[in-house]
Amino acid sequence: MSGSVLRSVCTAALAAATALAAVPAAAEPAADPTANLTRVLTQLQTLYRQAEAAGERYNATEEELTGQRAETGRLGRELAKARSALSASRGEAGRLARLQYQGQSELSSYLQLLLARNPREALDQDHLIERAALGRLATTARLETGARRAAGLEAASRKALGKEQTLAARQKKASDAATARLKAVEAMLAALSPEQIAGLAALEQSGTDKAQEELIASGALAGDRTPTEEGEEALRYALEQIGKPYLWGTEGPESYDCSGLTSQAWATAGREIPRTSQEQWEELPKIPLRSLRPGDLVVYFPEATHVAIYLGGGMVVHAPRPGATVKVSPLAANPLLGAVRPDPDGSPLSSYTPPRLPDGATAGPDTGYSGAEPPDEAAETSAR
Image (cartoon, rainbow, N blue to C red):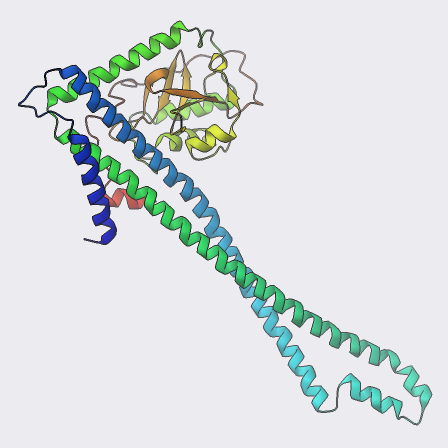
């Protein structure tokens, strides 16, 4: 077992051991089952949230690393060209030096003209001497400029490579963190009885129902609005992905994480948006919930670690979490942070018929309790 894998397993085991300390044995019911389930639910939600946050860090680093690799490659190509030009300039300088040594340079020609018996002939050929001198100066200038350019590009190339290596290490750290959290979830769920898992699902569903009722009662979602043409297309794409599994670090077509789904949906509609949920929250125009229209993005948690596409009628389409699949859920299924609009310059459609949801669009848990297995090595490799 490699050192990195061993560290990942140890980290997962430690997290799982910490979490399991509060999980009751199935054969020994707790005095207050509801309170105990609440603690377990909080621990599970925390681990899921940490896993998704690590996954979004992985995504952000992947985007930056891709750009940095392109920059490193560009600098490498520029450096190769500069070295080739410098070599050519050195060759020309060497040729001039040999001519100087052999008495064939413009300087020796100048001396010969000064000693010529016919001054008029010397004056007639003066422009030839000037042209030769300018050529030598140009060669020397090219040599000096080329040397400075090559040295600068070499330093920049070294710096770019160092940054690339730093980003790769950061990406590996985020990958290990996400995998460790998911292994801890798996260990917790393995220690629970089917009755306890059912109780957790019911408890979380109850919390979602209450949050949704409060949101509707607040009037924040009053009124029906139509999407733009792009928004309708993005929403249609997202709905076509229903039933596909969540897998962090992926953006289709076989699996998605939360921001992979939203970014690909809008890319299909012809509008590129940032890859991660944090970048979507930071860079796209924010809108109040009362202005939501289908196709807008709803962002969750204080750190903006989850995102969904607004469907309308108080519902969203999203990739919920590991172990679950792309589905339709109540808008308040997670703690709301706010909403953003990818196409603020778009004009809403004059008429709009909400899409018919495929069978089973709302089925299945948002929790992922039924199968929260971390991605295996092959899946992780393909995702990267």
